[in-house]
Length: 226
Image (cartoon, rainbow, N blue to C red; front, side, top):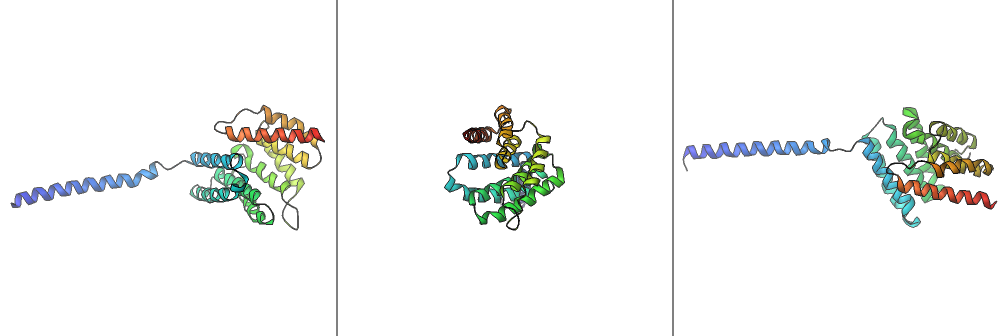
């Protein structure tokens, strides 16, 4: 092979090498360009939570919530300073605690409490006041001092705050109704349960809406049976 042939081959190889490197550079940028937005990531968590909470056998929920909590924590870290992932990480931890049950759940709900408080500090109105609502639920569900931080009065304040932000919300009305039943005011709960049944469907939340309405009907039957 002549020198000119070698030069041509070298030039050809360099061109292809350059093209390959540029292509690889483009591929390395591709994941960043296609990275999920915070809205997409939160939707992913919502949908996974709904399936576990409403469609998964009780015996399997604890492990599935545990895995989802790890995913939620990564999303919270990826979008530091955004309240939405914090709220959903808290909801998932709370649900994991509910599936776990007993004193072993207290560590999880305490973590969830901190996450809700952080979300409120950033923007309490985010996700229609879900951080206030979810924190209020913890305050009336967990034991009081000295075991945990439960406080029915704080719960009422937080749940009412959530209702102020989202007066027609399916979750805000359901949990305030549940709180009223638990604190001995079942007749006051009826109006809120009716709002649950009348609430407008949430886009992409069909499983959650159906599940929450089923819970509302069950709570209504409990009130009527007393």
